Image (cartoon, rainbow, N blue to C red; front, side):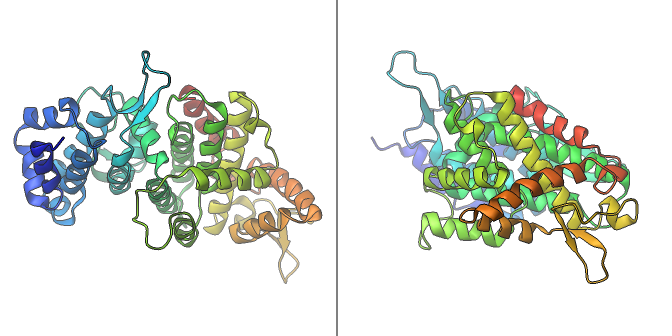
Length: 398
């Protein structure tokens, strides 16, 4: 059935200024269209209008607070609907997931406001204010600018939707990787690294537990999304672009294609890389959480190494020749293998049993380095701090 008012909402997605005015001038009107109005297009039109109103360049530049309020409304409003995301259907044969058509727009909103997503997760945001924004400060009391605040339960529903679309999944992973690069940088102080590492770990644990699955009661499906998300932590843009081309095809849109095949393949790759597929065949949350957080710890260690932040790079403690993750320099000293070298070993381990055996040792040694003075311990972040920050939200939202 043709829905004329919804068609007008769709038209707003092509007109940023008008879209902004529509959602900002009358709060009650906006609330109705976002949280109450019924749609027959799987929330495509309303999500695209919200995307335009909150992410368009000139709108964000000229109205940063209003744009952030609309971004908060999009996530908190749609994520709080009973007919959006995971929907329990007691009178039907199976539960459903509604709103996948909104995945691309919502991923773009989260990408634009990735800092707000991270701070909302770290602070366990539970706002009842659909339009909540804040102006926070970093660990050095520097202003961070205006950012939307996302209620974490409603954000979890949105992440469920984002994960179902391959392009949206990769868009959010790219945004979080870029944010991690911004947060982990050369010459950062020890307090800055300690703060950033735990914030990033908590975000990774939260997103891994929610992306693509939400509350769906399927341990194996959940396991696949967890492994796909964590496996791509720190991946370069070129790799993410390559995945999009491979699974969606070069002519496919940025979003709008099912993520199932890509997720399954990434899950298999992760199991080879992590050298432990136990959680793929059990509903054991504890094992799954441990495996995922250990891989994130390795990823964080490699990120710190790329910026010269590890203890052995600062002369605190050297790496030894017995460490399988160490590579000898021309001068006889040792460095940690790079992310590219690690990924190359993973590829070889798929078909070479000797490489697979080496990978097992490398994975173990990387964790050892992360926990001693050759790793990021001198910066004040213990391995236990990082893994605990990852595991707590992961277990809560499992």
